[in-house]
Structures are given as structure tokens and as C-alpha cells.
Length: 138
Image (cartoon, rainbow, N blue to C red; front, side, top):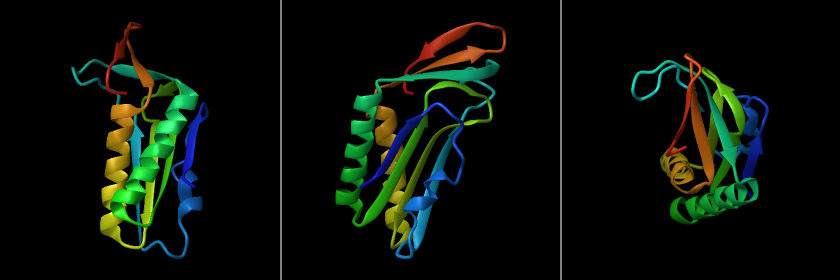
């Protein structure tokens, strides 16, 4: 069973360590960090995330199942924050643990790419000048 959560509190980088067992020869972790500048170069104070929680968790679990089918015996964990996430903080953490590194790398990349494409999570960029803008591709 994958470890999938949506949380309001800060994400500890090692929170998904419980997935790693003695059978994992490769563990890949992706941490999505809030940047201090937008893609257009505007100064970002924070991001605000909202989610359709039950649907998002179902998508996380579906993605984890798909990764296991595609890449073999891989354990996947996904944790995403909602609410305000300040610049420098972790917004999302994905871990993939497998017997071999190639499967772990492939599964981790697949999971974060599919999460960004499919999960009903929305983000608003909150700028240093006090303005804000909803963005696509959370």
C-alpha cells in the first residue's frame, strides 16, 4: 500500500523513510521547493495550495499503483502540502524505493510528472508586492 498524504504542516525531508526497507537497493526522493522567484522573475513570498483532498489522494494511489505495474516492485510515497507554503519550504515530496536504482529513478519521475498533470491541486503565487495570481500546473 502506498503512503499518500495531504498535510497542512511543514514536510520533513525524511518523512517517507518508513517506505525504505532492507530490500531497497535504490531510493530516490524528489522534493519540490517553493522558489523565491516566479518563472517570469517576480519575487515570490509564498505559494497557496488548495486541493480536492479525497480525489487527490485517490490519484496519488492510482499513480503509485501504475508505477508499480510499469517499473516492478517499487514502493511509492507522496506527500503534498496545502495552505501557505513559504519560499524555501517543501511543497511536495515523492519517494520511490526499489531493489535497483533504475526502477527507483523511473518510478519517482513518473510519479511527480503524473501528480502535476492529474492531481486536483491548485496553486496561487503570492508575490512580495502583495499581489497574487492563480497558476496552472500545480
